[in-house]
Length: 499
Ligand code: NAD
Image: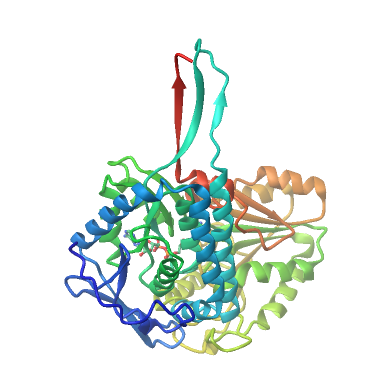
């Protein structure tokens, strides 16, 4: 092994030990059951986006160390796939219990490295854990089929088999749940995983590794590789021992990884960006619709692939909707997520703040009305106060791009055909919201919208049992539900002749 194995600096034997202090992960990654330093001493600092405080650092692993991690995952896979599904399920359930038992520590760690409020972070821990529980059971339902034979004296059918080693590359906006949504499915299917977390939020991933180890998940089955993103990803995409890549992140990086996986023809699953329309019908109470739109826009400070990005309101209630929306958004409390009662934490870094401002400036220059949003009230350099723009049009960046910030853009519409065309006027196709109680209109919109997910009269749409994913440039494949397991399974057809 070329990885440098360290004496553990903290006692993993103590199941009760808190995990909320990033200093616990002293420049270590987790490879093949060992906590390792980078061989060349390269490292990446991690900051609290609310305060700018340096929380710690993680190593950048070198190519030889990544090679070792891939070899270990490949080796571990041979035994892991042989376990019965219920045996893997028991280990996943032990992991699930530990994640829930450490909800408070994991939430604290997440708030510090990501910035979201502690309540939202606790919600993410529960959400992330729910995938582990779901797939612990679902692994036992990786059914094959019997095929009525057209060949004399032969029995035909299929069995499902794990694809092998899976590389999981994840973003910073949901540092825990985006890992468990992939890893639980892969592990349940009999695959081993190499997780490459976002450089901004590696500690949640490392805490998950610690808990996986405590749960008894064997060495090499779940490793966390920290490193320079482009280098690590390229090596994972190029290596033929890695059978599949599951990526959540921007469409820009997703495209790059898809092309890098072409040479080794990997199974690729991509959960990419969104540009969700939020459509309000003429029959809606404008206050009820505005309340739902505020929820759908500002969660995780707008840094959510499901965030309402274009709010399309019937012209008969447009001005009423805007006045309720602005009243409700003024009630949002912006500040350090560790403080009780905070609704919106900081953005992830200053580049995100600068991008949000340029999107607002572009809209205003092109004729949008800036109804609310005073950045002089921001409590720190990484914060962006919620903004309301009215009369947004398709030529503006606020319409075309995923703003990934608390910038709400609202536009009026008049007839149904028009609003379907407006909603579909994007390269993205992840999620759409529809608010109306008119059943005919619900059906027309639901069928006309080119999105992977449509939520009618509900902001909450996700969860472990549903097939999460997008169409168009929002991605390939699905996560969660029975479809989530299939991403990590091959179909093997058999023909038993001479029966
Ligand atoms: P990102 O694409 O910048 O980064 C995602 C991951 O890719 C990180 O691990 C990062 O380190 C890595 N990466 C970055 N540059 C790379 C490169 N050149 N080569 C290889 N790897 C690279 O995305 P982000 O900013 O972390 O996350 C925000 C994006 O994620 C948004 O577009 C959002 O919509 C999307 N997202 C989608 C979903 C979904 O389920 N569809 C969920 C959450 C986030």
